Image (cartoon, one colour):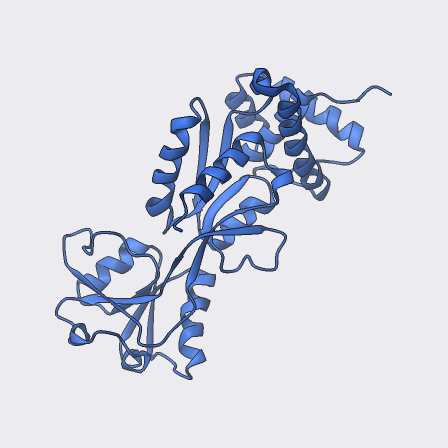
Length: 299
């Protein structure tokens, strides 16, 4: 029995998943919108189910049937390229859709991408930044093949996590703050401080969970929407910040000095991971990127 679909149709399907619309996928692939639409319709006829949920005025949302096909489609394209060998690189996508947690992305992704690009020229990159919940959603609905992120909130899901680093929580404060003379910062000393934490659900749960584990409830929690706003407020003396991410420079955007101290209590580190839905779901280029990331991880 002849195979009722083509590799090209699978490529077009994956492009719609990643870009969220037929129009954007057609532009990215440099083909007409009808070409993409026909490919999706043909696949839906073969599958016997809708691959996308179409809502007026919103991006196409992948259906459960679409998610099942997506995992197989990426694997099939990678296997087809393997069968064709070196002369069959044309069979595999030269695009990589990657998500990264917005705070750690600038610390890791530029270095990792530059390293990878040296031996993988010609790859097109689609980079998406988001908070931890957004990263999870992007992996599960297929917008990204692979992510560099914290492991927090992903354990126990169908997402596979491969550690590449670990970051310890710490406190940051202005250089004139009374606590800067202490080598480590007791959680109890922060009870009466304005504690500044980024306003992402999983991030808040992590840091507030540290206090609760020691039966401490901070009196004043200031939530902020970005890491740089947190650092700016801390440097100006607005309060004490808690974070795991620490850039090389201990200065805020306006040049003010930040003083960073470890917490006095031993807390669980935040694991940095490369995350995906399993090796069998990754395209050839995503597999090579994963290998490059793991090879670059600290020993």
